[in-house]
Length: 154
Image (cartoon, rainbow, N blue to C red; front, side, top):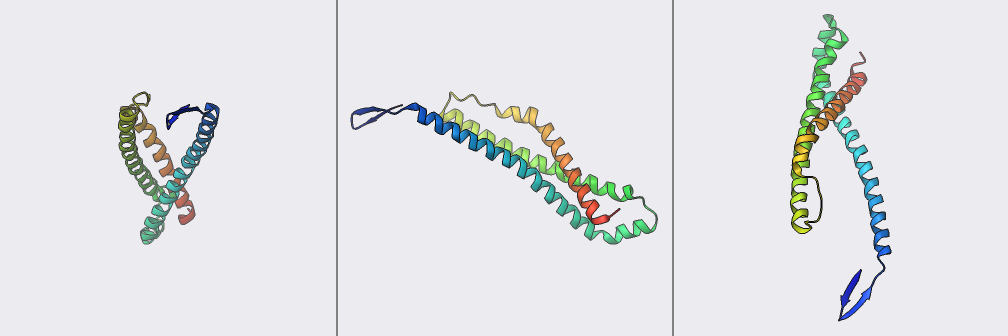
């Protein structure tokens, strides 16, 4: 790397820069892995909490349903579907925020460093929406089932 300072040209070894960049990439990969683990766990905990609040507010209805002979799955299914709907809403909100943030980053990166080869934001709309939705529906199901097992004991 060449630096011009007060009309003096000095050379810096590029190996140090490359080493620092490799270390930064390793740190960013670890950070990415931590984020991909923490966010789904937090989503499940939020869904569990939401379903528990709904179960608590409907406990008299649930006891009446049990008294008249409703099966366990007849009681569970509305809450499982509600968890899936919460998951879909969360996935859609996350998808929109990801799309807008990535579009902003994409525009700024192309503006300042046109040599970057980033994926276009339309990739996110065309390919990433379905996996987002499926993953969040799964997380909604898991959160609902955990809340139902702990609260209903059915």
